[in-house]
Image (cartoon, rainbow, N blue to C red):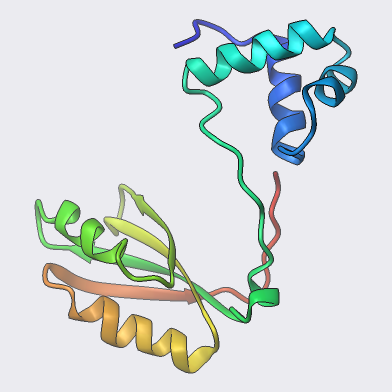
Length: 146
């Protein structure tokens, strides 16, 4: 792991977060460093596990997933791993986070419509053993801040 990231590393990361498809030359130009410097820094941050991959950002509504919700889950004591393993098998679950506070796990669900969202929450999620209760917050609008 890298001990510290300097301003150039942070600029490169910011540039890649906005567009991971940029060539190393384009990243170097935007970061105001040489291509070799950018290449070496990107490789170093990848080897250190800071850069873990590149992915396309998708607009879920354009794929027919027009209903989304965050579901907060309270689990039985010491069962969050079992719950996590079962929850991650549900195709509509797009993100899972273990959290501290009133709930143990938060999941992001993307479904085709409200009826499908209802099915996922009331049938899929609530049938998982060790889930004590859930609280759902429907997403009306969202903004990706990357």
